[in-house]
Length: 256
Image (tube, rainbow, N blue to C red; front, side, top):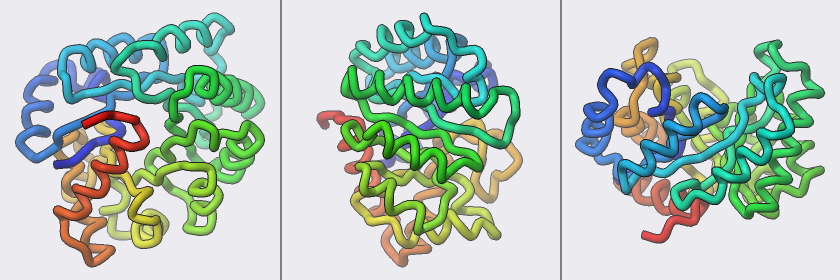
């Protein structure tokens, strides 16, 4: 059994064949998934999918790329959705220095507001970080994010940068890049992350693992991520599945 801890089944790429995609995931051994909504367009369908399938959960947040569009009333919007029984985390939230749609100071303000909300509603947080690792860690430390903990989604930092994340009660989630031939950092992280903090995800429809790279990703392919980690750590695939599922249930506070 596997838990895809971060998937966007609410994306337009799955509009035509969502049920088939979910069926393929179940056949591949994916017994649980968390669908992530990150704006007004993607949050309602994330909730709807979670309500439809008892083994699918939802996370709600505001993506840093779109921080410029975040208004004061959106905090109440997230607060209301955070009460839903199938919502297990706030996010994805964080910083993205790759795209320049939202100024850094605006991203930081929206990020801090969501961390504070997570502490208020007592939910873990899912961190989006692109080319901003040091600033992400600094803000998490300043906002005392260890009070709720969370997930470093699609971890791309160094082994050294992983340490302060672990100290703040964060789990390290690895995705398709760990299967890429020249992806040095994810492979190093996969070898060094403590087993009790390791998670797997697809981020589907994005970041498809080898040998599907460049194609639409889907949750069934999280098996490739787990296989790559098992090989890198010289462990049984089944053990990686068992450990990462147990960890996901723990951080999302899901009773089996």
